[in-house]
Length: 241
Image 1: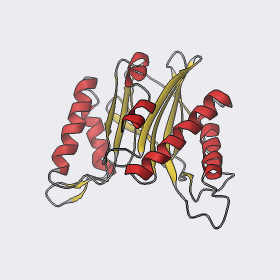
Image 2: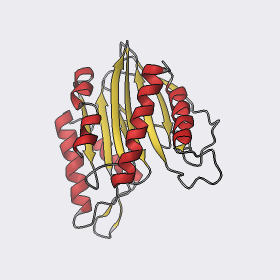
Image 3: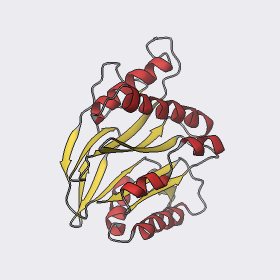
Image 4: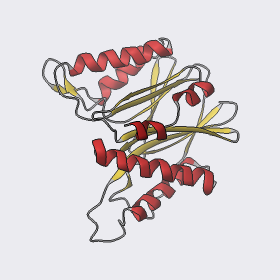
């Protein structure tokens, strides 16, 4: 756990760029298959929420590979377009896990949402592998869907991921997240929380202060879960521009 937390970026890097932001990070086990990553690179700022296959130790090992390849893509290879970064990650992780071989039994991968903000925070570029971007603007939910492909695993080596450019408005609230929150069983009937209810939650809390948003999401998750076991890692990143 100490090693994984040391490798994760300091949340203060995000709050330095966006004072109105939060990271709600709740591993299922001691170590975690979900990870967040952000960094300022010259005039741009990158923010990532990722969900690796599995949780616990297997997920944590995948998260280390994922973070390493993100750093390689952005800092060594100087790839800047979000879709191209995802395509690079796909090829590299498949290579590391020897997934080019039909005999490979390691078909692990990850789902991921990547945001790239320009210097003036007037535009964001989004690319997603099975993970969307939600923007709440003037009390309306806008969903930007991801490509329906994971990074690595059964995804083709030649898969190209798309980049969507989005003009930002003042007071827009952006959310990227893994599937652990919506998939949690609980409530009076022991059912999944579900994506629609999660989106409604985001809409209901987005006008609160950032500290209150995180606290409210955490309270709602714990209340829904009740005495049920947490089934997956949970990660939600919120940014107000």
